Amino acid sequence: MPFPEKFQDLLQPETKAYLFLATIMPDGSPQVTPVWFNTDGEYILINTNEGRTKDRNMKARPKVAMVIQDPANPYRYLQIRGEVAAYTRDGADEHINQLSLKYDNKPWTYRPGQKRILYKIRPLHFDSH
Image (cartoon, rainbow, N blue to C red; front, side, top):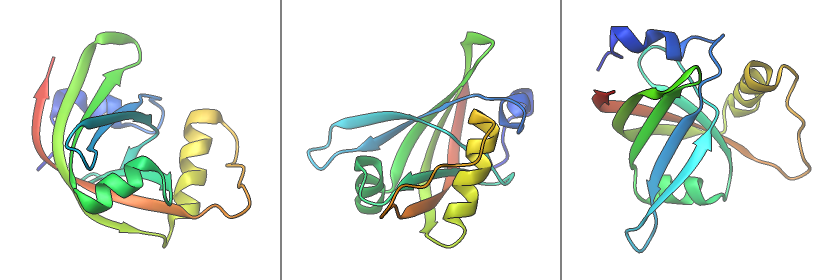
């Protein structure tokens, strides 16, 4: 499903918009985390450390909801419902470094024992404000 044209600016590498990711806990309650993200034009790409709550939730329950908020206007945002299409360790270290350069303007600082996971999320529905 293509991203809405009027929100393309929020997807650009120079825009430091955060994505608020809602996953589902084992008891069915929602869990929301602000995350760095980018897109390949078809999927939303996020990155996390193996074993984090969002990692466990998405592996067990792949349906997610997301909001990308305009950093210049908090009343403008894109709501997305989607599902995890794939996750992998392949390319995850390079991906978190790209995101760190985008959001922090410096390379990612790796911690001992860290195992990064790259998630590809397929958008299924968009709504906006």
